[in-house]
Image 1 (cartoon, rainbow, N blue to C red):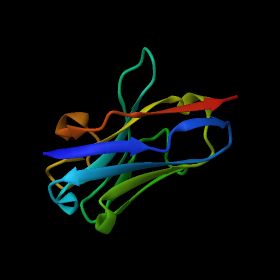
Image 2 (cartoon, rainbow, N blue to C red):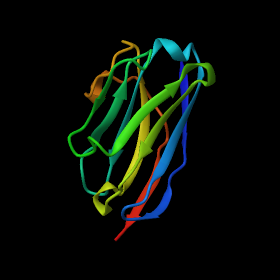
Image 3 (cartoon, rainbow, N blue to C red):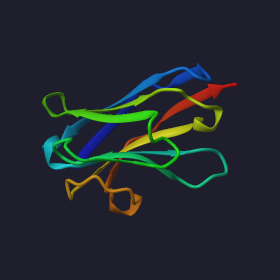
Length: 124
């Protein structure tokens, strides 16, 4: 079992930046591939970014490429999402998730553990 807790969300103006954190506890964090997803009201869950267990492989959704960066610190059991040049359409609840494959995969069905989410609101 892995417990995930996101933090760092908030209200920011368009063009600004936020850094989300996801702290993991439970089993060995470095065994898991990690992902970030988001869901806006009335919309389906959307893949944002993923990292392999080592952090050596990353994968991004098309809408965030070049603006968001996923990273992880296995010594601190934490994964991060640096979000730059934020847009109003980035407004959503952001979730981190862990997959047991250790891979950077985009499909949410591969993720077994999920956090509770953190709200990000970007004003225009």
